[in-house]
Length: 130
Image 1: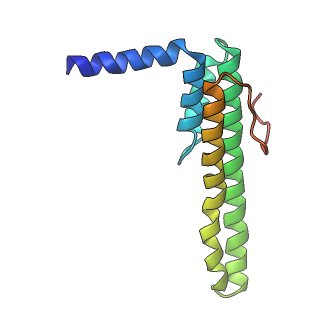
Image 2: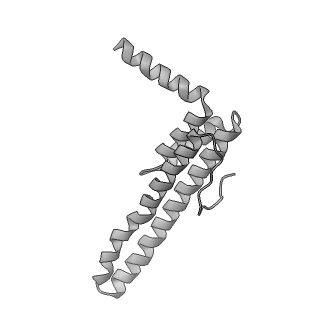
Image 3: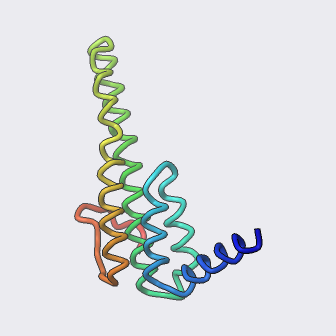
């Protein structure tokens, strides 16, 4: 038990002291349900400490918000199509997960670029948080 606590403490210390690891954590946590929460926490904690982490956390947060907006818009459009087509359009609901899948791919690319110390931005992103 004591070694487990030491390992967790060592990992937490590495994340705190390494801007690349902090940026990676922001990208990886951002890929999933409530994907905006991880990047938001990283952004709020590190926004005044490190410019590199702030930039990458803002990119991940913007991408998570954009993904959520696109998914909500798709759900609304697909619901309207389903009602108009008397249920036949319900097949389209399988496509709602596509933006999340694209976000996961871009989050992995962003994490790799952050680990390499590169300033990378998402190819398509809404810049709400700077």
